Image (cartoon, rainbow, N blue to C red; front, side, top):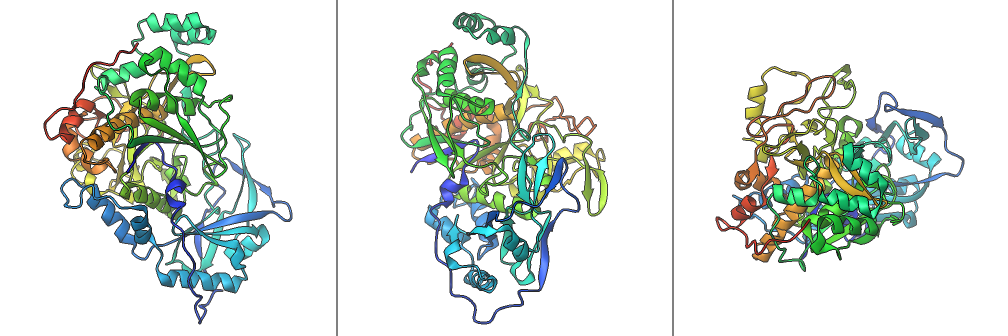
Length: 582
C-alpha cells in the first residue's frame, strides 16, 4: 500500500470511490413545510458587496452532506489508530471500511429521498458522491431559493473583484436537521484567490538584487555567497538533520500537494532550484493530477505552488511527488478549504470538512496544514459572539481541525525563535483533543488572566509543530526570489515527515498516519522546543513561546534523526553516506 504524507490532501481523490444507491422513499412523508434555519449571517460577510440577482436561467449544483449512521465511530476509530498506547495503533482501514464507517443510516437516506420526491427533483439529477454526499445537478437558482428558503445573490469581494453566488441564510425542514450536516454552496463565502494564506514576497538585500538580474552568472554568485539568514534546502536539511538520509521505500511512499486558485508549479523552475540547491537531484520532477477540472499551465507559475513543490521535492528526493491541481476555487470546492478566519466559516461546514480529514487519517495518511500568517489574528479582530461584539483572537481554519497537523513558523538558528507571523491560538469550534490534554494546560496556567475573554481556553490549540518560515529562497519564472510564510514552513515539515514515513515503511511498520498522537507522546523527545518569540496580532502582543507547548510554535521543530530513533525504539536510521549538495 502506498502511503501519503501531504501538505494538503485532495479529499475527492479519496471519496470518489465511495458511491452507492439511494434507498426506497418513506411511505409516510413528514411535515416538509415546517422548516428551521440551518445557518445564517446577521450581515453580509466583511469585504463582500451584494451585486443583485443572477441572470435568469442560472443554475447551481447543490451538495448535501449527510450525517453518518454513527457520528462518534469515525473519531473514536481515528484516535485509537493514532494512539501509540492503544492496541489498534496503526491498524489502518481500507477505503471500503471507511465508507462503511461513515455511511448514512438507512433512515437518513429514506428521509432525504422522500423530501426530494416531495420537491419534484427528478432522480436523474441526483447522484450519490463522495461517500455520504448527495449532489443535485443543474438546479435553477429560483428553485434553489424555494427549496432552501434562501435568497441567492451575486456577491463581489471589494479587494479582489472576485464574484460568487451565495445566500446569507438557508433553511431546511426541521426533521432533516438531524440527518444533514451542511449544504453547499450556501453561506460559506470563503477566501478569494488572492486573499487568505499567501506567501509573502519581499525584496531582501543583495540576494533579491542579484536574483532580479535573472542571469546564470547572478545565480552562480548567489551559490558561492554566504547565505546566512536565508533559507534553502541544504540549510533546512542541515538544521533538521535529514541531510544524510537515503529514502529506502520510494516505491511505496508518495508525497502529495493540493493546489488551488489556478496556481501551478513550473518544472523549469524546479530544475533551476535543484541545480542550485540539490545537485544530486537535477533530474527530479513531479507529476500533475488534474481534479475536478483543475488546469495545468506551468508557463504562468504561482509563487506558492512553486515554493511547495520545490521544497517537498528537494527534501524528499527521490520520493515521488504529486501535485493535485483542483478545479474551481476553495469557495466552490466542497472537498477542502483553502484557509481563512475560523469565524468566517459556518460551523456545520467546518465540522464536515474536518471529518473528511479524519477519514483520510484512517487510511494512514499524514495531513499537514499551515497555521496562517497573521499571528493571533488580522486587523482589529472585532467579532460578534452570542450577539455581542468584542475583540476575539481569530485562528485559521482548517488549521484548527484536530484531525490534521498544524504547522507554524520559526526563524534563525542556534537557537531558533518563533516567527512573529506564526498563526496560533485556540479554536472556537473544536474542543481540546485528547492528545493535547497534558500539553496545553501548563501554558494556560502560565498565561493566567492575560487575554481573558479574547480566546476559548478549552479549544484545540494551534499549531502542533513549526519550521523555518522567513526569508525562504525559491525560483519563479527563472529568477531566484525570497518569500516568507507558513506556506513555506509546511512543505519543509511535510518533507521531513515524508522521510520518516519512508523510514517507517522500510522497516515494515507502515506509515505514521495522523501524527499528533505520536508527536504529543513518544515523539516529543524528537522535537526542538522553541522558548522565545511571539505572534502579535489583533492590536496585541499576542502569545509568547515558552518551554513546552505554546500557541506560537506548538511543540517545537522536528529533529529527523531523533524522531527516527524513536521509530526504531532506540536504534538510529541507517543514514548511509552523506549526500553532496551545494
